[in-house]
Length: 421
Image (cartoon, rainbow, N blue to C red):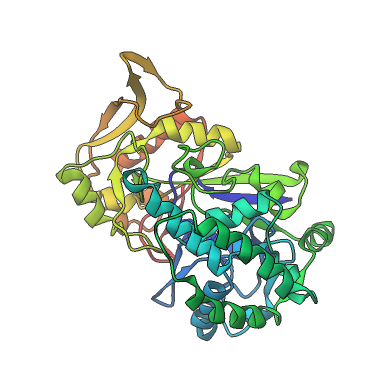
């Protein structure tokens, strides 16, 4: 069976740490979607490490790591990432596999991303400008280049054909991007990628599953950024929910086992787009400072707000989450009272359903209020040490979501993860 781990909010839920923790129980960790806009933060021997493309099981010596076909890969970013973490993981290349069907991000994809975002003016969606959206557009438009193409004889011909198409598109924009400077590093990184273990990953996974190996599929971004079910158009370009595992790795739905859903004890969002429980006051700023809420990939300050159980129940439903994990609970140690959104009022009507289109709506959250904890969660070594106020808070969340909490993260350390139930 393939278990799944994904974020239930707008990303940045702490997936990297949780995969790193769970990886010791698995033989294979597989990324199934997204691109280098992911920023999975781990702390290895006290050193902060941010992974953008490489699966987060790479620091567990027992794990093989697969970059699946649903991922879009920037060869330069991947090369830089490998060089950075190899001193911490000397056997990295022996345990890293890449699907031949994964698509490549070209320099001109990055140029198109920047030009398109600039043309939107005040209507920017908050793109990370890494070429991910244009790469997925070429994938669905049947124009893309794949990892398997780099070892074919006509790779350069295919590359030039696609670049010429991009040049025509770029002429439509007033915003000029000097993308040519990115070409040489791109081709150098492509040469580097030829030394990778490039495989037909769907067969590789099938063989391992038949041999009884345990696989954990690792998602990027968050459920509320799903291209179909997120806060469209302020979303990413791939399916971030559990259904994306089947397309992103080439596995059948019947092989999906446990679905771990990760949520922060509050909410954050990077970039533009609707955010019903956002706090733009001093409480929101205090949350940002207490949680060090700045993007791992972009460095942008994250918008902060109270936990939104309406959006969270929607995400749990979409992916069939079987086990909840709550992260950054220690950030709320100094906050009292705490608020939890349990409904919305839209145009005077109350609802507990997440709307089809939240852009431009005036949404008034309906809050339940809870007392803060009587002692810091960050000091707890076991679930039995957790303060009563926190366990009551968790019981309310479990009841609302109809899903049990499996783990609680109470700090950045690899050992700061408590088995809750």
